[in-house]
Figure (cartoon, rainbow, N blue to C red):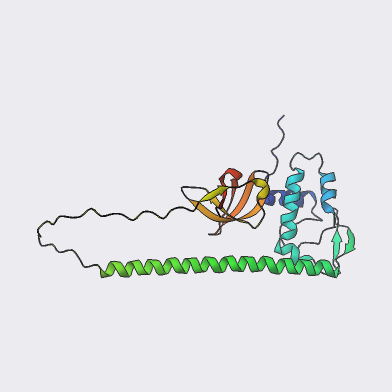
Length: 222
């Protein structure tokens, strides 16, 4: 009998945890502050579970506790809970302050990306308008026959050289690092959002999130 395939995406692992421990994890609504060291409890409870590995559990738990929904729940005096939903200890002022700072930084990064995206879209729009204006200035061709003139061969401008890229080692990558990703004919700038063995989760500058192999991740040459 074939064993079920292990879950590979963090959102699927979190949904699975919400099914297994509904008093502790949730995928919608308000989250609850988790017991400090709850990963060890998870690893022990799910030690023989064929659906998840320790690596996936750790990554999914990091995603869960870094989400805005969870960071909003970490408030001084709120009770941290274990896997069964039992209160174990209150959230300290220090932990609340850390959660608020993390939330502020996360929102600032998203706002900066959105601002850069809007500026890029505005630049593209202005360039398109300029092209239309230039086309409008070109006089219409006359239908009258004209003597043929010898034409000099036109020299087409060379395409802009692609940035020189260097291969990158997995152990030299870090979350938040700017890289170049080859997912087509030309490299595209992206930001590393998750590292799992040789699978690298990145977010392109256009907002698209994708997973690529380390062989397709490069850094610009110095």
